[in-house]
Structures are given as structure tokens and as C-alpha cells.
Amino acid sequence: MKTIFQILIVVFGVSILNAQSNTKDELKRIAEMSTALEGGGITGLLEKTNEQSWRVPQIPSQWHVEHISKVEQKPVDVAAREFGKRLAQSLEQAAPSMQRLSAGEPLYNETALLLGFSEWCAATDGYGNLFLAQRSLDLAAVGVARLAANLDFPIEKIDGLLARMNPAWMSIEANQRVLNQDAGATIFTVLNRDEMERTYGSGQRLLAEQRDPSLLARRQKDPQQWRLVETPAVKANLSFFDPAESSEANPTVTLLTTWDLNWHGALVVGLELQSIQKAKALAEFRRAIGKFPEKPIFTAEQLRDRERGAAEAARAGLKVSNMEDSYSSPMAAAFALAWKGYLEKQGEDLGKLPPSRYNLDSSAFQAYDEVQRGVFFDRDTANLQEHEERMKKAAKANP
Image 1 (cartoon, rainbow, N blue to C red):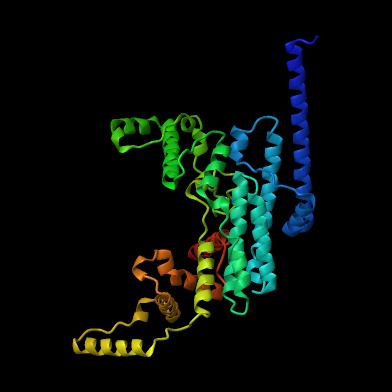
Image 2 (cartoon, helix red, strand yellow):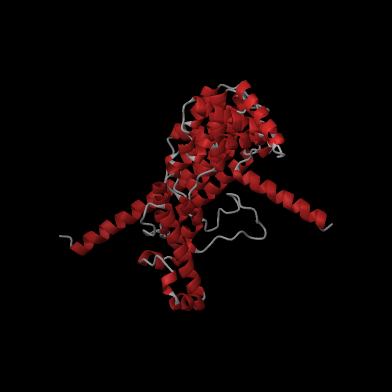
């Protein structure tokens, strides 16, 4: 008759074998996905994914690999991170096509592909997964803006793309879940961005005090000025809060340059994208107005009011200032006039509208202007462009 000790030995041995088998299977799956990516790019990977029902692996941070990963899990985590980096490189290679493709079916298909890729990346909770999903969605927003600016492209097809640009992974719940998962502890407990930022800032302060005791002494002299979150989970994981710093070799902030850095702070503040807000505004403006006016068009009544106002100002010896004078260009004024007129026709109370709707014309004009000038970029591309401009100016200043 087997003893309890013998039974435990057997169970433990089976558990080890199962873990080794699972690790081997996961590494094989990641290798197969890498091969599919290398052979067919993002398109080929997604096609193979549909055939094989592959789920994207959970991609932890480099910090997680170094501080949290267990021995049996570390090979999988390292492989997942390498695969994630290849995905990031593929997205960077795809970025130029969002400017190069004609604003019709080719661009529509590429935009839909990027949305599908974003959804696939975020289907598994993970630190790297969210950043890949964000980068892909940012690129898709470029496509949506360019398509919305093309009046010949059906607005209905654009609406189908827009419906996929409010992903659940941008929510505070998803961000907090992934942060705690990557930390290996429940560091963030309150579903509130301000409180999450306070917790993250507290961890950074406590880490700084650990490195420089004089900072702690300074706080202890006037404790009333501080509202630090000092839970056991925060204090036990201070390296989690170590701020990311770009190196001199890679001073530009992009997904690739920050891939190995401790970038948890970005998840704390949220992954919302300005490109999406501008693309949505442009599509909404087009849907409401039906065109993109180049200069203000006033009604007969508005023209009479302008003439009366000008005459009264002249009699009073005052300088005449027209509505369009307060805008950067006639087209910016035209967008504003058309949008306010639309809101009034809809019977909306302008005084009660949120700024995002009341001033939607501003975002719409910015998007349209950038599309027309060929500079509506995703964030990484914009950062790279700005870096190149700085380097050119520095070279001219120091020949």
C-alpha cells in the first residue's frame, strides 16, 4: 500500500511533466506563429490564425520576466516577448502604406486588416498585447481619416470601421487588470484614473526615498503635505514603479524603442489616442455637413447683421472684426460656421453641449487639414518625423 508521501511524489512528478509538456506546446505554437509572420506578414499571420484557431500569447513586460516569471514559465514569456517585438516591427513596416495607398478600396482593406490585428492582439490580456493593439489601432485611425476626407468613398463603409474603434481594452477595468497581472500583485485597487495615478506616483516616490533617504526625512518633517499610497503590495514591488528612460541611442518614443523599458505608466494614464478622436470628428462632420467648405458661407440675414455691425462700429470709431478673423484660416472659420449652423438646425442647446461636441469642428478641421497636407500620422510616425526635424535643425546649427 502506497504511503501518502509516495502518492504526493507521484502527483508532483505528474504536475512537472504536465508543466513541461504545456511549455513545450506553447513554445511550438509561438514558433509556428513567428514562421507565419515571417512568411506572409500580418496578412499571412491572420490567415493562418483563422485556420489554426491560434490565440495570441500573453506578452508580459520585461520587468515581469525579470521579477515575476517562474522558472517553468520564463522560456514562454521570453519567447512571447520576442514574438511581440517582431509584431511591433511588422507594424512599423506597415506604417508608410497608410500614407502611400490611395484613399479607396486598397486603404479600406488595409485599415480593416489593422483593426482585425488589433482585436487579435488584445484578445489575450497582457502588457505587450495592449501596446500592440494600441499601435495597430493608431495606424487604422490614419486610414479612417483619409477615407473620411475622400467624399467619393462611401460614408457607410467608414461607419463600419468606426464601430470597431471603441475597444474594451481601452477601459480602466482592462488596464487595471493587466497592470495587476503584470505586477503579480494587486497594486491598483480603485477603478479611477486619478487614484491609479496617485498610487503609481506614490510608488515612484517611495522608490526615490529608498534610493535617497534624505527624501524620506524631508517627507517625515511635513507628513501632512503627502497622501501616499503605502499598501504592502506597493512597498513590496517598488521596482515596478521605476520610471522608463529612453536611451541616447533611441531618444524617440515609439513602441519599438520602449519595448524593453518599464512603461507601465502609460497603462496607468490610459491608452486613448488623439488620432481616433480626430478621425471620428472628421467622419461626423462629413456625415452632418456633407462636404468640406473652403470659406465661410453666410446667409442673407447674417450678411445684413455683419453690415449693420460694421456700420455701427465705424460710427463709433471702432475697428471692425469679423467672425473669420479669429480663426487660423478661412477654411477653419468655414468649418466652425457650418458646424454651429448644423447644431442650431438640430435644435441642440449650445450652452449645454460638452466641449467635444460643441468644438467638434476644430478637431474635424485639424484632421482634414493634416490629411490634405499628408501629415495625418500615427503617434509613432509623428514622433519619428519630429525627431528627424530636430536632427536636421541641429545639423544646420552646427555644420
